[in-house]
Length: 359
Image (cartoon, rainbow, N blue to C red; front, side, top):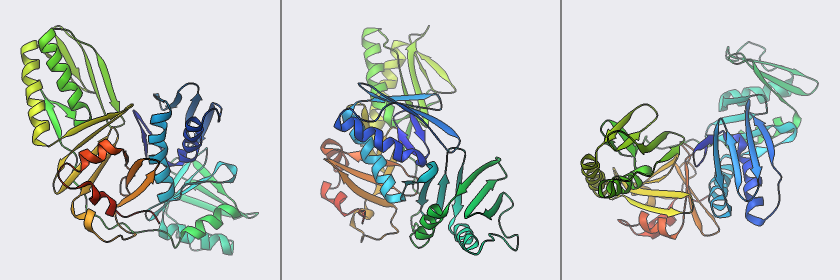
């Protein structure tokens, strides 16, 4: 997935987003447009800001933030080979899976199945022995391969150029050798999980309310969580997607202290660059880098490993940003000088340079 502030979307939208963000960075360019991929619609609005609307969520940002997301989306596109082809077909290689998307549908095909489909297309019969999965129906006619997902009733029609690109990818699928990593820590406030991306601002808000009795409401939204602050009968209300609790000024001061103590225990550091809030914190044997929906864990030992194509972490550079992609989750973070300094608060910043680089 691609995360942009409060929304996330399929990797198939990467080519369109890259065009729009690159145009915003260089000046007037791509017009507003509506796009469909994988059966979902996206609206890209051009004005002073770039607006992206997807599944009832909206993100607006200017050139500095567009550069950030151009870097993260661009590294995903390079690493996964995301390519927009004729007839609005998008192909991508996600580790050992093939993503095939068009305006009507999106299919994920494992490498053996992709090989079988290519071989069947070349001989004119994809499944002579009915060996395809039960959910997938296919046929070859007039130089086209039709794939139909029986679970959704959606379909993808591929031509010779698409098949040739899939064929090229067959020997480029890269296995992933990486153990599961722990999830970033959260802080509980009366039963509500506070993600570290929101914790610093919440602590400041609670502290201000305890001192002034004034509440400035706001909402922090990310693809995986939501935190809302508003006035309440008790004084101040803290809510997520499912629960809400009220705090008095005295309770607010107590919880501000608890959050601050937990952030210190995690050695958490907050940096803000435009609309991009980055939090780095200690984890088991490494550091978490959290930028709203993008959460990447960088183990200390990975900084000193040989550069192998199957490594989980990929590093790239865009302008003055260092970009790190987690191939297992597609989470991607872009780091400026301040974020790199925060990441290097325990280990030297130079260790980031030995992450596996894109060829």
